[in-house]
Image 1 (cartoon, rainbow, N blue to C red):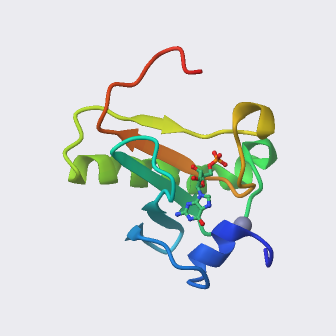
Image 2: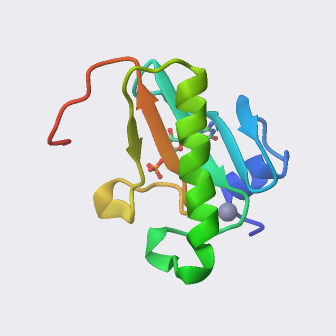
Length: 112
Ligand code: 5GP
Ligand code: ZN
């Protein structure tokens, strides 16, 4: 999608600190980290939010979560949180699906 921040990062049109990339997924450090580790895992395909997922996306979402799991293993994280915000009321500000990988500090539950 031409006017999407994460599509532009995935296409290399806007710089980011890339920490992982394969054919389907790209991961980069969040510009405003909320924890010592704060990585955004993004499918290269544009999907606005989890609201728009259907069965055709099953493999892609599996790959996204697997990439997060592998990255966490590589970083030797002893615990972490994966977050996907859907719509503004839940905190979504960029409307291209992404998974936050947060770690390096204690995480509260329930979240705010
Ligand atoms: P959301 O609020 O949609 O769940 O998460 C969007 C995330 O994207 C936020 O944590 C925000 O800090 C991050 N973000 C916004 N703009 C940029 C950017 O230009 N570069 C990077 N690396 N992260 C961004
Ligand atoms: Zn996009």
